[in-house]
Length: 133
Image (cartoon, rainbow, N blue to C red):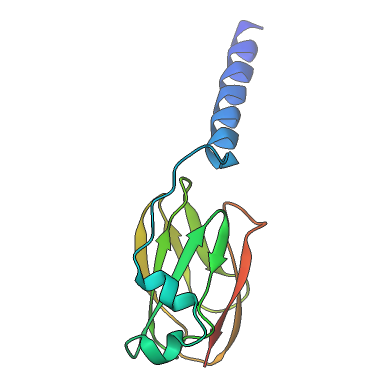
């Protein structure tokens, strides 16, 4: 009986730690993204960004995605939140990157033009669309 109680206490502690880590309470401070991310959200981002590059910023548990990216472009993802996130193609698309809290990663956009639904596998309520054209 004691062994079962210990196992239940350990399982509850691990679950609570996992839930607390993903809660993302608004009390934390956020890292300011580089200036390029604000330009990426502007309607003229495609004209001002270097060819083949794009930026996605994750802030307040939401994606800030450029209007579109070129096929095969290198996409930089900056996570301004205090929790880790992913940028994962919901259906087929071939990309699934994990971005640590406050971190930056790069992945290659699909070569095939289209609209790719994206989600965070850690926080399924987060969603967006990556338009490749």
